[in-house]
Length: 144
Image 1 (cartoon, rainbow, N blue to C red):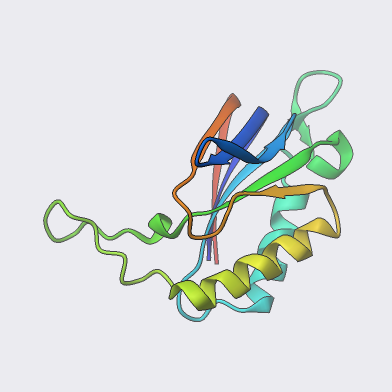
Image 2: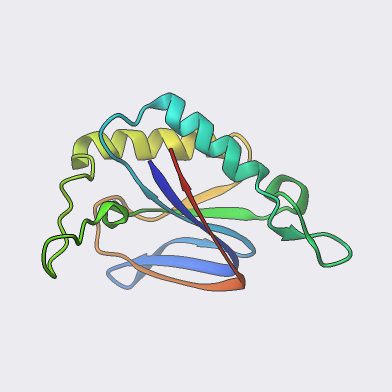
């Protein structure tokens, strides 16, 4: 499982020009799954995400988690996180988990995350437009 975490001022995701998820300050998460991912993987990464100290404290130092700082999460499924570009110019996505299996894990990931913070999502399997203002910029790569 791979999660690209980005601290944001605001974010939204739309499908066919209709907004399906929108947050103010918080985190944008791009989430991808591979063979072997399971509920333990999800639990581990959710704990990492909610405890990442990447929000500013009163002195402006990145010392607070999203739990302490407040804010929401916009979670977007992203099978292309497992792109393999070793052979030629056309990425292979063979390492990405099959769509039906990934969708189950993506739903479980969002449900686990929802226990701690408000979560908005994109639309799994859709062609989405994601826009956000990255603060910092702060971008963290998590993998298990």
